[in-house]
Length: 138
Image (tube, rainbow, N blue to C red):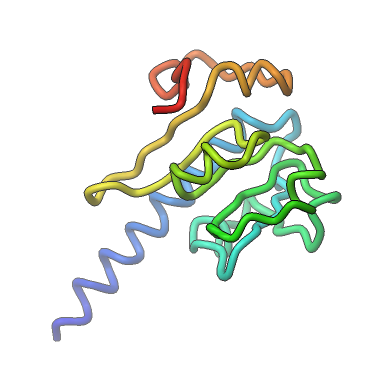
């Protein structure tokens, strides 16, 4: 009896996460769906894993974007030099090719993009992303 509301909330959360990932990837990539994404971490979040608009690549070289979800930093991953999104704000500081972060804080999704890093890799986001773009990392 108590599981039904939680499952429904979990489904809503997964659908919201899918929409957020789709919106971010549409802005960051130059290609149309399916977006080729390499996930570095233990288990991709449902917004990536169960998303029909995203193809999870087996290697970072074959991906358009790398999503970093692990605090264990890989030097070999840094050598790939592809735009990356992190799922943790601290990783945005550590990974120089991370153009932004998508993370949950106080029960709400947060999107942060760093202007200088976007410019460095030649990404121009649509105007509806302006409120997510910061000049510096906090």
